[in-house]
Every structure is written in structure tokens, then in C-alpha cells.
Amino acid sequence: MCGGVSRWRWGLRRVRTGRRSAVRDAEWRPAPEWTATTCPTLVVRGAQGTMPAADAARMPSCRAPGTRTDLAVIEDAGHDVHLDQPQRLYAVMAGFLNSLVCSAS
Image (cartoon, rainbow, N blue to C red; front, side, top):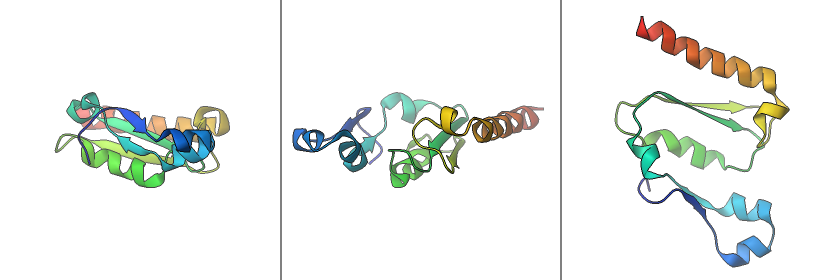
């Protein structure tokens, strides 16, 4: 579902069983700001991170029609992509930003 509040939702029972399993089982719902923003956006996710791949893949479909949302998955990285794979993150970000500059000219 693309409407709703920006938060991860989980029951108290899941939180008590451990943070990692609670986050993995949580349901991502976008904030109203996410669905209303129309600027080009790059979503970066570490392949071994806590955000489920299905949630990240759903993020572009929750934006306004025609809004550019690129999704990049960085291999060999967890939640802290900037620490785990800084060079790969830089390459993905540079490619995204260069594509914006080139498409604007």
C-alpha cells in the first residue's frame, strides 16, 4: 500500500524477540512527503541491510507518476553502505548525479 504514515510498524512481541528480526518483519509504509516529492531521487540499499528487498523495490511505485526514482543495491554492504562500500556508493551517486546534469542540458 502506498498511502499511510512514515514509520516501520511492528508489534511489541516482535521487538522483544530482537531488533533485527523485528525490522526484517516490519512493513514499510511511505511518508506523505515521499509520495508527494517529484524531484529525481536515488534510493540506495545495502544487499545485506535490514530493509527487505521487496520494500525497497516497492518505493518507486509509491511516488507521483512520472517521477524518477532510481534504486541501487550495493553488494557486500549492510545498513551502513557508506562505511561498508564507500567507493561503490560514490560510483552509484556520481552516476546518478551525472545523469541529472546531462539530462538537464
